[in-house]
Length: 64
Image 1 (cartoon, rainbow, N blue to C red):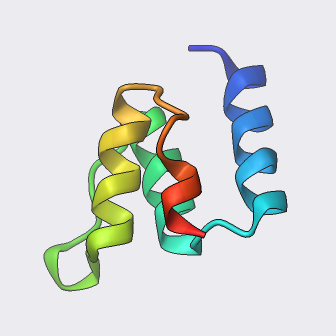
Image 2 (image 1 turned 30 degrees about the horizontal axis):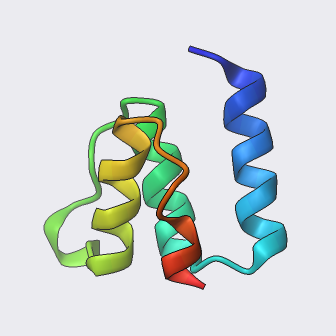
């Protein structure tokens, strides 16, 4: 796991004004952490989680 890539991606998303739930989901997916409990999941979080699991940075601009 490349922690520099994780950090750089997180900073890039924050500076771009990406939805906070997307960023949190992306970070948790990237780190292979368990998902949030069902009542705290939304579309932005789920999309971020899936992208994070794949280490995908292509879709974050959809969540500004």
